[in-house]
Length: 185
Image 1 (cartoon, rainbow, N blue to C red):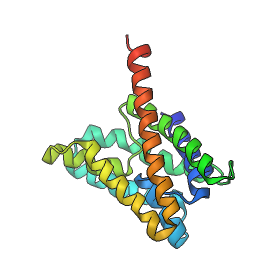
Image 2 (cartoon, one colour):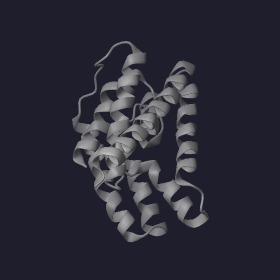
Image 3 (cartoon, rainbow, N blue to C red):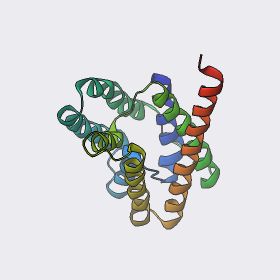
Image 4 (cartoon, rainbow, N blue to C red):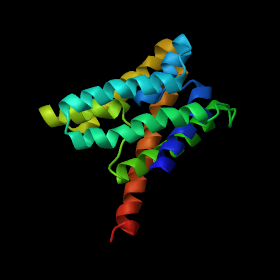
């Protein structure tokens, strides 16, 4: 699990934050808060994760909350200690590489039935209490974060954020296919 969270932290600090692209989730919200108000991304992610843990405690099973605790605290710590700098200067290839790394990190988490907390919590709550598919709710949350790029950074960054969500989703699906085909006994 630590490797998957570090992959996510690397993708945020080396590709998304320097490119100012908020591609969904708590980390995307954190990038928007950094760009708009200079709030460090690790602090924003930590704050969002704490709020989501409280919601999880009250609205989900205790075991789900326990599974969320590790990722909710470790990801902000990894964001804090992972340096932020431009690895790839042109924004387009930087976002593509970051999206692939991010997708692999999420795929590993999903394989372990774990989460980094954050905006994955509301979809789980809505699914449990109203039966709405988690992926639909998560898509809506990610879409709203992507739209935030229009107001905080630019239309270009909005387009890159949408592209990033698509690339990460494809990578997650490919990793799932690989796992099902080659790693399932």
